[in-house]
Length: 408
Image (cartoon, rainbow, N blue to C red; front, side, top):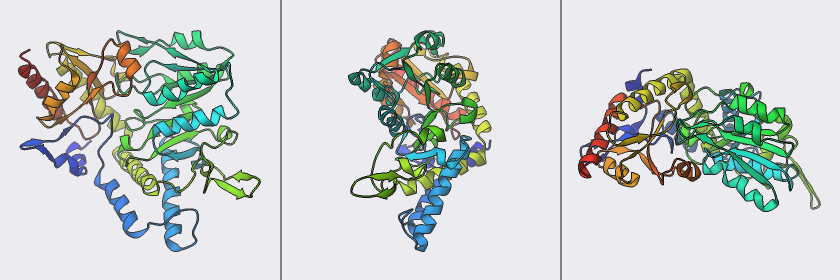
């Protein structure tokens, strides 16, 4: 990959965030930066095409509809779905998972049923399921091996039973970087007649994803982590399942016919997209997919492997620093979480910010996992296609400044 050429596509990377301190953006697990190619497509839409979709017969409406629908096709092909009807646009991963939860609860889940999740999950894939305890639905959690941050796969077999109706897990951990064997987990679910949902927020931006090979029933992800705008996400669902579950929201565009007595639902995927959609966001997501494919997902993955391996080697040289997650780069994404002696991660991040280095501190919306690791919070650096080894060196320089500040 031509990293210098790629970096020129991202105007924010030229910014000085403090006098003399150029931005070193290492918070990509939270959200990615946006290239000109995405920014320009959104700007062009509002300048020349803006109109509501699926409703008008005038030129602007027809153009907007075509652009928005085409984005569904692009995104569905990007994860190798069979057809665009299986690709629902939402606001984000959280809404996608909530859609599945509410739609399954309405007719598919009942008191006495069980769900299997993991302690590794983002809050988005914990909270929607644990609130079902009030409905008499039990939620069980698979643990991790504390040494390397890998799921104890044998626990899926131990926990699953005839009452299990859903198995769900994160594809790539936003704390540990662990890439989970979702195909194997999905087979366990399907062998026991349970649905299988994957949270792909941290995988789709960074590697090739094939939902057919994975054989998941649902796959949720967000646009803003993959160069697209905020407020746009996606949910893949197998067509036969989507046809047989209820909509999450009701209102305009998701209906086929309405009378004062009853309503019938629109065709897929519009059945699950009520009201006026985030049209520009969807078009921006399509543009982001175009950009990622032009670079090449295999090349992006290879770049991140080399960068993360370099970062781990450099960080291991820092006295008093503790790292989390697997060392095997075949099962690790571009996320590095650490703690430094007794320095609070917020202090680490604040001092590093004075050097222009943007990292994340806290529990990363994965509080049960952080507590499982025996910590209150960590500092996290996360990489993407535009990051460089020189920026990793800036990360190390920032940590050394923290040590000097605290006289470590």
